Image 1 (cartoon, rainbow, N blue to C red):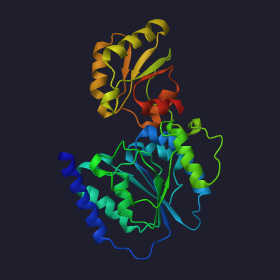
Image 2: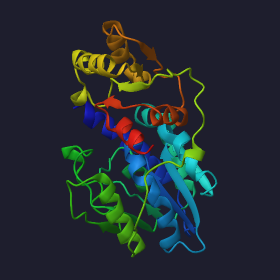
Image 3: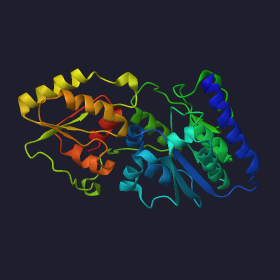
Image 4: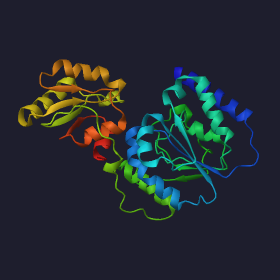
Length: 307
């Protein structure tokens, strides 16, 4: 019932935007939307340039809308690539109706002619609401799964997209799904993409790191289903210290503090706590020089693989 009430409130905001912003002649502007999490962005970002080069966007002004949580990572590689950028505060977008209205109104006023949403697990309340508010002539996306759609929301996007790509391998690696969509959009094969960050783009860490080596511990996750017992992290970390004499460095964001504190209180070997003390680019440098990573969170795993 609470979800339905929230959804109703979101719909009121959305349709008020559509009612108040009435554009007639569409401008030659394109908006690319990608607002899911850090790991999803890491596995998609290398398709940005192929899409911009290959898709028929001649004489169009191209804008990008991303998730504020990975803005600093985006700027390492794509600063200056787009004419205009939007950074969505997802928590505010879900909880603050005033922010939601202002954000959707700003998108609607741009009068986009083309929207490209390359996300497979689209959400009615997040990216699809933004697509709806943009009210473009052509919306391009992927035939989604149901992961982020509630049962009573299923009809929302029935006629929202004008061109939908059907993924062939639904349960495959997300990078491959991204590649399938990009090749369909570009009408050409995309070969030899390297997901790694170039070393010269990474800032030097200002942390005093152990010279004898260290390993990274990410004890938290956005998904409660993935949380591992502290005792398990302790057991593996004890082994890494006893066999290799590596110092544990505990990493994560504000939401991981409770898990970090549990680990640090129970772990009796050398440990350094840098939870919420680094930027994402600096964290990449720290992860790059680690002996290994211990984590149940896919975002940190994709970051590690990218360096």
